[in-house]
Length: 257
Image 1 (cartoon, rainbow, N blue to C red):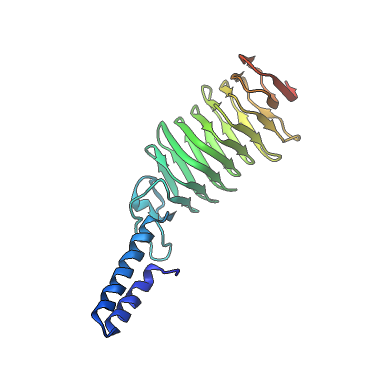
Image 2: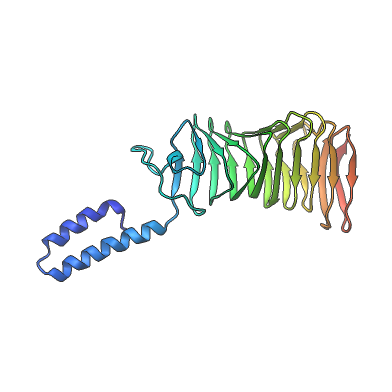
C-alpha cells in the first residue's frame, strides 16, 4: 500500500464510520504507523530564503507552495539551492546530496567540511569559497562556477569533475586532491592568478580541454603518493613542478609549459 500523510484524515473518517470499536483502533494504529514510516524517509529540501545558513531549518522547505520550515535536518536529506538564493555553509554539514541550481549560490562562511556523496553546481550556479577553506568529503561536479580569492578547496575522497569555471584570483590559494581523480572537461577552465599551491595526491588529473590549457599561474605543482599508475594532463605554470612520489609510476599526458 502506498499511503501518504494527506490520506490520514480520510482514514480517520472511515474509522468513525466503522460499526465496531476494534476497527476504530485499527485505523488509528494504521494512521500512526504511516506517520512513523514517513518520518524515517529522507526529505528533499528546497531553499526558501534569499540569504540563510545551511544548518538552519528556516532556510529550507519541503513544500515550495506553502513554504513551511523544514523539519529537523539530517544527513539523509537532499538539499537544492534555488535561483536567487544564497545559502551559507556556517558549520560542518552532512547530507545525501547538494545541488546548486542556476542563479543559486553556496557561500563558504569559514573553514568547514561538507560531507556529501555528490555535490553538483549546475550551469549558472556558483560555489563561492572566498578566503575560506572548504573540504569536500565526497565527489563533486561543477557545471557552473567555483570562485575563490586566497581560499582553499580540498577533497579527500571521490572524484572532481569541472565542466565549468574554477578560478582562484589571489596568491596563497590552494587546490588539493588527496585521493580520487580530477577531470577538467572539454569545456572546463581552471585558472589560478598568482602563486597557489596545487597538490595532486594519489589520483589522476585529466585535462580534456584541448582548446584551452589549464593555467596554474605561478603555482607550485606537487604530485605525491604511491598510486600506480598515475596520470596527469597538460597545464601551464611558471612555478615549480615537483614529483615526490615514493612508489608507483607517473605518466604525463599532454604538455607542461
